[in-house]
Image 1: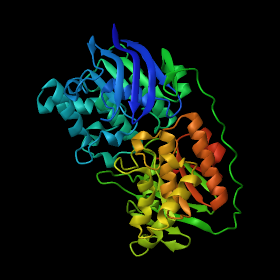
Image 2: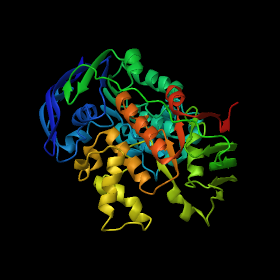
Image 3: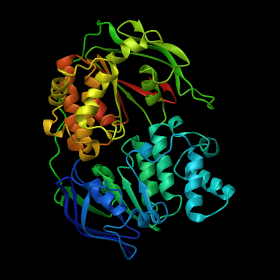
Image 4: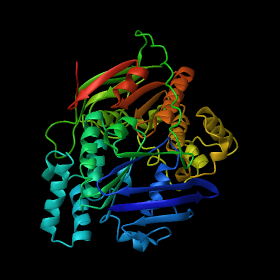
Length: 467
């Protein structure tokens, strides 16, 4: 049975012809991979299918699902499908998870909204699907809030949300970019194992995943079906800084613990990062990498231990003065930017928050930052949704550089990008480190990438460093 048929699909947004005559079909029992570099039109194509395009988008062509035409359909028509017959796994888990409701409550509400069942049955279904997607201790985890999950666990919760009502079509938009290789395989095994009951569209830039899991592949380039584009290579890392140099960042006996958990998320870890050095922190999802980064940035108060930046201990009396010197670059290039702000305002925002904005010189500083991260000035008046993932991540880096920092904490900064764009962003980071002498704490699960860019690598498991 053919579940989805797309014919001659065109999408235009504010004069940009982003999707140009795309046609394909997906059948029950099949996994179709939609691949291509960032900005190729993959996500916009599937947003058109799901009825999630921005209001200013213009759609032409045909989108037929389960025998009905949905090109130009109203949100009311789509509301009856999404979550029941259509399941969606987005790249950014926090875009669909409410921060004020527990994971279990959100899953149970999804069940009750479709199946009209009682609360106990819905709660049981929520716990069962959490267990199915590989979240241990589902009864306890169902009572947790999204911020208490690691990035990988949040993504698994979103996958649980998509499959809990057994949809006929599942659209997974880069569903495993933030997960370590072992969990990636588990999630893709889970998703593709649903093909007996569903048609699956997997939007990805991971060629290994395509080769392993897809029945068919559709490659997009500049909005059209095309051959795969050339992939750029990553340039060599900067020279290793002298060991005798004093550390830029010194972390000693750091311990982080979350409410309701007996074992600490980070357990007595110590390490240094020197000026001009990249220290990689790697490990499986949930091992404590991002918790360590949050404690270093003082976004989460550690239970014990000390963090020093250029010799000064970070605490309530020093953090306001020192925070501009250490800046984060986040995993999700879209979620880290306000959808309401134009790019020039997003880059200027840190300067305004820190009281360093000069109305006369500020616009020139924004232009300088855009040039520094190789962003065209014509993008300044656009909003994040009008940029590719790679462009948005460069905006995030420009925001971080606005404070003239000494240390960047990069939490999976390229995991959501395709290989060509990933290489471009990594090469940019290498260039900035060479020119500015920045220290990087680089969090990743990609061993191959870390081997290419890191001067030293620390491996975490269950909150501790391995030998």
